[in-house]
Amino acid sequence: MAPRRRFAGMGQLRSARALLLLPVALIVLITIADVVTPHVVLGPLLVIAPALTASFAGPWTTGGIGALAVAAQAFIGWHLGPQYSQGLLVQVLALTVLSLLIVFYSVVRRWHRRQLAQVRSVAEAAQHALLWPLPSRLGPLQLACLYLSAEEEAEIGGDLYAAARTDSAVRVMIGDVQGKGLPAIGEAALLLGAFREAAHQHAALPQMALALERSVTRYLADFEPADRAGERFVTAVLLEIPDDEPVIQMTSCGHPAPLLLGPDNTVTVPNLHPAPPLGVGITDPDDHTLDVLPFNSGNTLLLYTDGVIEARDRDGVFYPFAERAAQWSDKTPEALLHHIQRDLLAHTRGNLGDDIALIAIRRATAPHPQPPLVEQPRDAEGERMR
Image 1: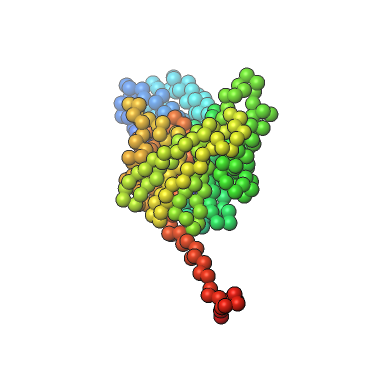
Image 2: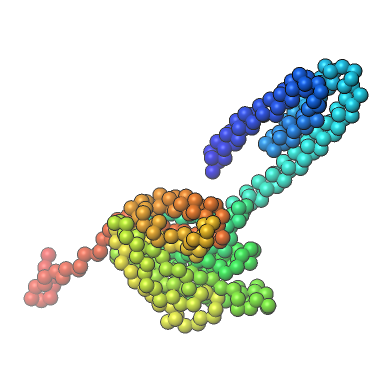
């Protein structure tokens, strides 16, 4: 992040220096035009120069351009002689006052920008603390993740994802908290912490889903407003990918089914048996169905939240997620999400209606099943032969 910010800052500095030529050229042109055409008063237009400078430069640069504009106004009055000197003092004073007001605006603007930069920095730190970046490799799997916020200045929201490595498998969760704002972030943080702990304590996904259900239910009982009881919940998909089997075990809690991309640009939408979302009070693990799907080498599983399939363009047309994703099914997970992000933002023109989270998982190597045990021959007394 630091090199990108440094290069971006250098680019902005060069751009500001180039733009500075515009107000200077404007002052020169207005001065020449006012001197050449004495019957047309163009001096008051000099205030445009500091006003234009304040849009891209700081207070000191804006003040310098304002002083240059005042000097140009004085030069015009001196050059035109006594017939122009009657209103010269008023024009110079008015231009000075306006320039000072523009400099004050520039100071306030810079202060607000610094505050916004601090807020963004805190939001970015909070996002990394809440949503730990997924590693690019877990066991035999390649992973990539993407988070897009619907709010331009926001970094985090109610969409969530996490992954955990067990002894012989990888467990992944993606979810979407109903609602927005701080309550949604609190529920997301709770569910992520509960998943990271439960992933190592429960042997089966239905039992792990029940443990997450209890955690969310306890949280809502303590913090959910009384007038909104029963209205908050979390949709999620829990999955486990064994190292030595070409399958995916999956349990859905009211969440959209993922896409299974084949190496030949095919897309399959698994027929899952979803349980109700987390937070509605399920107490029986049998209510969570365990679906098993084939997952061979070269296949890519694409998990997502509903912000992707609900994204629209100007005409209200939904983003054709499955169709577009199929075009890049042969890409690496990171490249796949890069193409989807660029295509999605182009479809919506950057106006997302909801937060979006995506996870791409690809089995990089074929699983190696354990060789069968071979019974060694024994002699007549039952001893193994050496």
